[in-house]
Image (cartoon, rainbow, N blue to C red; front, side, top):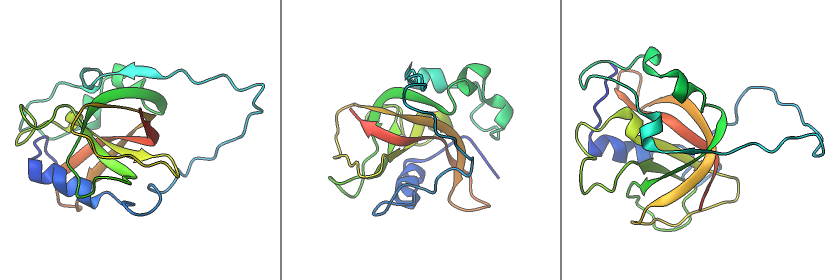
Length: 168
């Protein structure tokens, strides 16, 4: 059964269950890519994004459905975005290769009942690391839609991720 509500414990489990803490980011996409000579490649425009831009309408106890994702959100998928938020507390303080970016710093609204669109899994670029910060951070990366669950019968923990990311 999938549901919108997450608990702080659920996000913590997500942070711990995310593969690759001490190895490379998650497996690469199975889509074939073709190299374009540098002279022909147009620079990809980074979309400034906020958590409000990736929010959708959903009643608290309803099940998540892909149809809830709006066209405005879909236009950001597979694009490079820049988003500002807070690092969900981790067990490590330095050398992070991935982390969970959340809307706020746990002092207000994040916790039991938080929405799926209030967190983004962040996988840093190969060789890049970050240090945990209690201050807001800006992260840039390729925005993707992917359902993350702890197990097949478990509720959704996250639906958004940033790949090939860097912390500014």
